[in-house]
Amino acid sequence: MITSAPWIAYPEIMQASETKWVFRSPTKMDGDDIYQLIAACPPLDVNSSYCNFLQSFHFSQTCVLAECNGEIAGFISAYLKPGCADELFVWQVAVSPKYRGKGLAYHMLQELLMRDELRDVNWLETTITESNQGSWKLFKKLDSLHENQGQTSTFLDEDKHFKGKHDTEYLYRIPLKKSQ
Image (tube, rainbow, N blue to C red):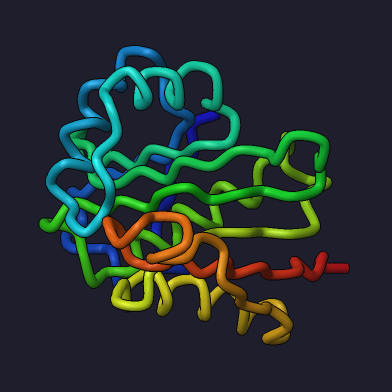
């Protein structure tokens, strides 16, 4: 799926009239570019490039890639939870430093949730470390659009699960209110 946007609803991301944005499902050819983007986006965990190729191929329907004038600007990896066809788990949200602060992450999330393949999704889940304020802001914004019904809980504990090698990951579960 490819979506071009005139940015009428998102004027904060429009930098110049010659800017061309495209939102699409990734392909296998995007795997290495996604790997490079994520590596440039601390504090995101860098997985193997093979993982990014699998996301781009096996999970392309639940991931979104944003391009600005042909340059990769952002990526969201997500998947439908096994056995839970109405629950979308957002794994990572990466926005190139060049495109931060313009509403791109939120727009990618909205583009993803509007896909026909995800029309039955009623819940969005993600995990966030306490210090990742950008992610908290993004998902609280989504939660506010859906009447602030989201709940957080400890998902993976720093000591118990990570043995002190990674910060605690908090699960943020947001019920998605369907528009009438």
